[in-house]
Image (cartoon, rainbow, N blue to C red; front, side, top):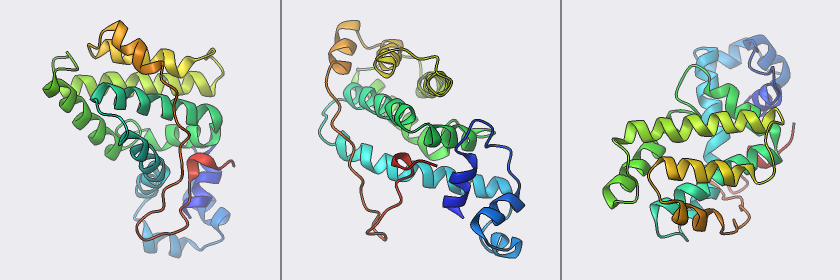
Length: 206
């Protein structure tokens, strides 16, 4: 059902789906749907986690090579925007599963807030509080993702957005420029602990 949901919502107007649509795409009964989910919102919450968890694992693997909060933040922003650019279907699915809750899902929001707090505590970020930093980063990333999906972006747009977010968080222009000037290693799929063959939605096309 997760894959069926991805197939259905990975488009500009994909948000407007019914339980019947998901059941038809997955070739399961409505009763089977309710064995796992209490509502359509419940399904979207689960799908949001599935869409982002494998991507976050791949990003986290690369983050281990970076020793500052600023560098990890800049790289994470760029990875997300490049993924949406390379796979618009994943980008649209991420947009649609974020509507009505935290941008890009509650798990992502929690991680971002913790990162912002870490940056404030380390003296790398200069912003009033972690909640404001979270809103700045996620809000700008959401807008940039939509720019990319609607073709309003330009060359090196992920880098430009990451630079603007970092400076908005209080990182100096020189430091932010140095961070985004570093090449991003290619993301590699990471198997879940209970799944030796993970579904990597961010690398799949509808």
